[in-house]
Image 1: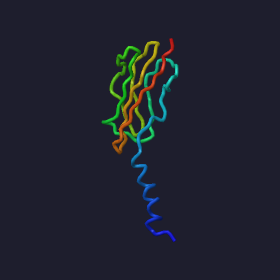
Image 2: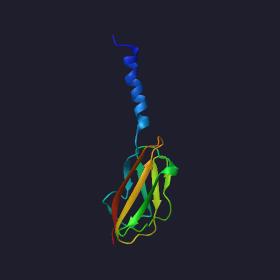
Image 3: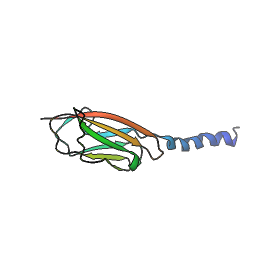
Image 4: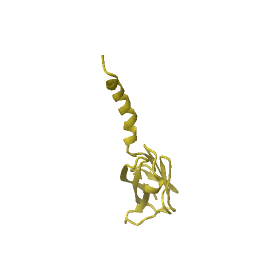
Length: 115
């Protein structure tokens, strides 16, 4: 017969492991590789709730110039970046996300604004 400790350990680990999760990009609009009309807002959804003061994003054009209209806005697991009317071309979104348990992830993706 298993001991109480042997039975309790897997249950305790199951409760602890979500606390060590990382915030990964779950959805982005526009999506990576997508060709769209000029968006007014870049929106991203992450797998974990984010720390607003430690997470952010920027949007740059093909020449590396920042075209963001201001800092990213973070609420719960979502992040948005406002952009002005964008000229046709390729744009890059660079993000960094710090989940509420302080783990940091970062990434980049691109989209194209059609003529």
